Amino acid sequence: METFLDAIRKEKHIEVAARRKLASEEELREKIASLPPTLDFISALGRRSENTPGLIAEVKLKAPGVQNIEDLQLASLLKAYANGGATAISVLTDARHFGGSLGILQEAREETTLPILQKEFIVEPYQLIEGRVAGADAALLLVHYFSQAELRDMIDHCLELGITPVVECSRDEEVARAIACNPQVLLLNNRPISSIPANPKETYSMGSIENAHLFWDKHASIRRWKEQADRRMISASCISSAEDITNILSRPYDTVLVGNAAASNENPENFLRDLLGLPQI
Image 1: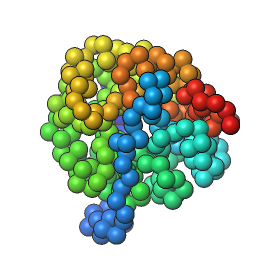
Image 2: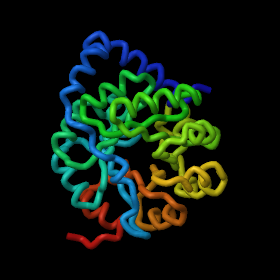
Image 3: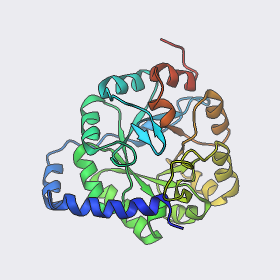
Image 4: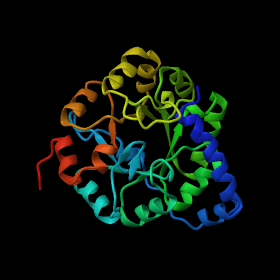
């Protein structure tokens, strides 16, 4: 069965081939040479207290079967996220399925001082270079797309560009490849996105906070990995309440990533403050 991610991989190779004709890798690298250093993404990921995680708030206009934002007011949204307690921002740059773009990423970089994660279906190093030019401080690497050797190479490409690689697993089968590469940041997705069928409108919402517990409880390799200094673990997807945060923090997650629930909320600042147990302003 072709999955959602398999279908997107084909799309991304086509998109990248078209963009290479507009700007070569060498031309993009010339732009990077004049950019300031990336922001410290790792420092945004630690718990602020025993009961308060770091929080990555996402700019996510839509998802399969879901419309979060009709009229994006990016500056206002980013200000609300920051005031709500976000320690970092995630920006979807996929256009077809999530309504994002590199332009939105570039504008976000101009509007916020928080570090930014580029959330994209990255299948080629060229996309990492594009993201760095647009202002990304970190990039998401889906283990589903890579062999262990390929994943190591992509991590190295990130580090060479000054970007923090965020390695994502959404199924048990992906954990061994991820841990073998010993990433500094591991994102465990409560939504099994690499299992979702190619037409995801009816199934994209599948997932559960309980998966955050299952990843930790089932995989001794994750527990050993986390014993190392300066390793950060992110729980992502299906997070919409303070109770969810409490459940996640029963395992040693450092940070949560909140997407649809934050982007679709009419008052994202108060929503994030409620999640984190912070007083309303």
